[in-house]
Figure 1 (cartoon, rainbow, N blue to C red):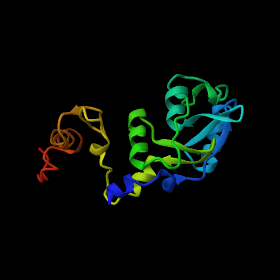
Figure 2: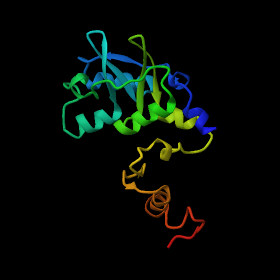
Figure 3: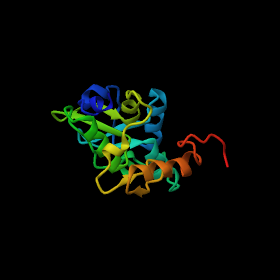
Length: 180
């Protein structure tokens, strides 16, 4: 079942509602739009071309954490650039690899120079039959990367034990339910 989903085209999973804003707009105005529309990202345009994406993460890390004035900061100055995107016929597996490599959760889908939607990691994961995506199938051959802390392990068994002991609780995955 999971392999079937991973081999499907991303077009099936795109979120078709998205907002396009001009790069000269202030962060405050963009946040107001995001709040009103109940979204957590906007596509940033310059000269009628998509150039980046502004996410809540960008606002927190590049505006608030740097003590910039959101009413004077232009979104073009803090948006994630360049715009990383895929084509509609890209396989879900390949899109997830890009998202993992680039540490992003949203990926615009562009067809003939026009954005047709945004692939959102949460939407793809939510459509999988199991509660987690097969991260190990997506990892590069040099090792298995922990989705929580980024540590790399030689085998999937080592990764599983690490997640069990460090992130979930000693013995939980091995059937031990008591905490030590």
